[in-house]
Length: 410
Image 1 (cartoon, rainbow, N blue to C red):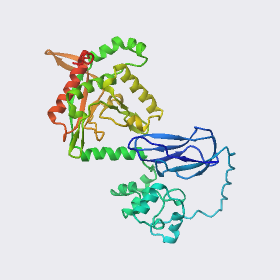
Image 2: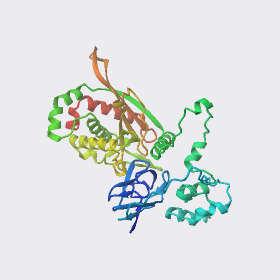
Image 3: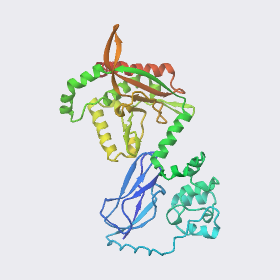
Image 4: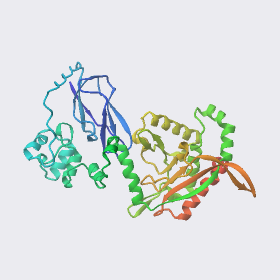
């Protein structure tokens, strides 16, 4: 029996994905729940498993294709024996015909309209009274994709990504340099990261304020109770959990930093979903510790440790990154002494932690050596005044320099 493999639900606010890599090929035998294809969304990379044991039949969505939730990816022949691989073409076989260009006659392009249309493509075509035969298909076997239709409607001959890239043409390198270059398509995740960061810069009135914090008390407390904490709760005692607790208390004092702008309204959020930025080989992901305001330090540290493990193994899901109200990024783990973090829209604030470094500081008119960390708060000046931003960061400093305040909530 033939079973359709489709794009699963991708998580909150995620409607489509890109086929990043086919793990199995046509004719390969697969076991139930064995990954067959890897999809990449604007948030994570995830694997789609086989719904049953069998043999992978026709691959409908080729690598690089844009697919929506529920769209067909491939056909699985349940219980069928592996297909015999097709013989390789003879060396003198005629080369495949090149794909038709945008100026090709309609007779050539008509083959795309003979192929089945996905629900999303069919809806676009019907709602806009378009002729599929007049649109160049870039999907597998010349199938039309949603991007093809949208590009056609905009009068473009390339996909939106290609159009954006062509806005600033690259200067042609010297031949000797070109021979040593490698061109690699940007992943969907990297494209979206780039777009969102630029959007944040273009949309928000973003400013950054800095402060420095003496980490002596927090480091002493950690050294004194680290072993007992880890024995009692089964999770390591780091600094991030303490900064999450400090951020929550500061957000309670300055609610605008936990709010967002929606049109001409301000939405104040009386809950604290704290995003913790985690670096992965594919790019930065920001899983969210939900309702962190109702959690103790051990629960927060356990959640952060779980996110770190799953991020390294590519197991972070879109739902893990949904609903954040404030973000913390720790560039210090990579050695950053000071940086300006970029907002994670639609959030209005992001806290940047940095490297702990011993520096001479003046305390009670005496020069002493202390472990110091620079802190940075980037904020949207449209909603957060400078006084609030500076006071918020000063509150973080106050709490971290005297961890007893975190325990007492004062």
